[in-house]
Length: 472
Image 1: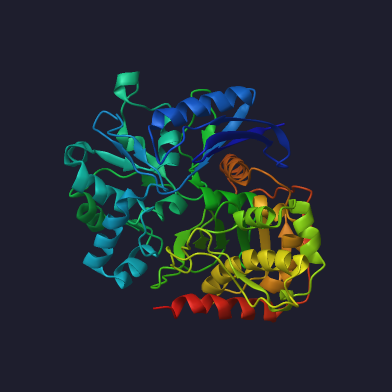
Image 2: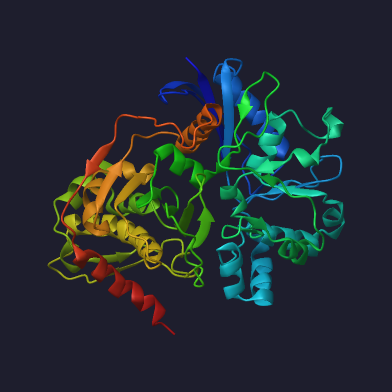
């Protein structure tokens, strides 16, 4: 049996899965935590990776490995491969003003057409502008800029800072197209770095990682295993799920992420859709909402019942909850851009204020919030054929059964798995096989749901959501 390893170096932890290269069958796994916060010294990622590998039983018998990781994070290295300052992570918002400045300088159309996305604070280029403006001494030391998964791949390939006995070889830094597309200085349309943008942000043109082909080897480990190019977390998850053009992934975690596999790149001037690349040579348009599974958490607290009881009540109510409608902006909202908004319950009458309709309104609101993201992607000519529901919110029986009537297509719920790490492992197997397409892995346990479309649900939701835009 030939084994491959997939790594997920996420915001919160490092996970390592070992899989059969041919079938994808799970062999073993391990994980280790990362420090909390919105900045992190990359040495913590290396320590967590080593701990996770040990818990996974080691990698000596692994023939290939690849790393998927949190997107956007800014890792700056000096000429000796030393980390200039702790990495700013995707969720560090101190560069929000820098994002606004860069947009003002170039215009929204420029950013949409250049890098496929309108900048927000998560993008690497905004963090580089922040570094230039707030830490000029550190900015002047930057010899190379890379992303979290690039840096960990570099270390796995045997490189590292000279102070730790490494070779400091910055020219060995590599990345992939999916993660590069979230920097703000790489174009998914031309597959080229936008050096002038980099210089406008940082004031210099440091070395950038070489962008590898979709199944190109990044080198070998010290035990002789092949190393894959890696991927951004959403692209790695799509590869793990085996998504094809026409497929949509909706991740219901703390936030909601709607992403789709498209054969063409998207440049959305509104900024709602981020036009990322994927890990297979296609594109991964993506929409993120702030509110997702915690909408269900709120339902349990407000009603004083369990998640299972919320499910049962919601499934006993009619579609549309007899006109009871929730706008679930409990934490403001990113899509649509209403950061100061709050949640609101509309359409209450003596007749429809029942526990059943209340539970149904919360579930429908969660789904409509994500359906808005799907509609934004679809407005660019994309047609959804299947929706894959993943994340903690997908465990809800009511969410699973009501989802097809909101999304208007078949809904597939895969087993709860570490999809980023699995996608990385599948990429490692692809590099090892040297084939035009990734290996076909069959992971059992998928559930499929279908139901007649109920347009009234989304129509009602949009009516009350639009009230937020009519306020003074």
